[in-house]
Length: 220
Image (cartoon, rainbow, N blue to C red):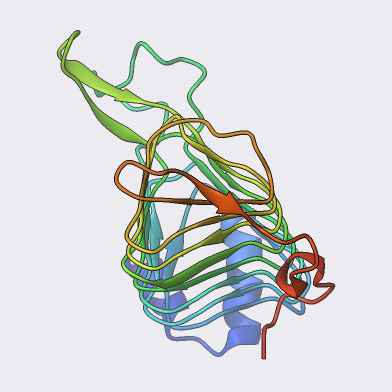
């Protein structure tokens, strides 16, 4: 714990050196972590990727962040690691507590990302606004134990502010989840706006919308 605290306040070049050296992380020289408490078992950050100030990311087996992808300020990213003595999730030997964030994607500010099971976010995705929750675990009321399921978000998807996405859900590529929606199932139809509680297909998205043809992650 003391070593982690000391690394936290170091200048970035020294911080990166010690994170790679002591924790065997793979952080690209042009990646950056701000004043953030980020200590998964394995961390891979590609060129240009950023984890901004005041984000906490703990109790995960792996975080992998693609080229020019961004995790913004004050996000809470946690999970439940494998290999513990706990009885929780013993029935799920294939569970992977991981966050996989694709190239040019962005998680903005103050979101809660529960990676008890895998959350896979594709390329050019935006988890927009504030206070969305991606929750991969809950209590199985039938069997009376804690259970988990992965979340998949396809390429060029857009998740509106203050939404909830539950384990076992899929938001397809080239689609939008409207603000304050609840996604609780697998959808497969692309070029669609999904919204509501629970979310359902609302209307088609025009295929000439420029968000879905971006070649850069940053939106002016």
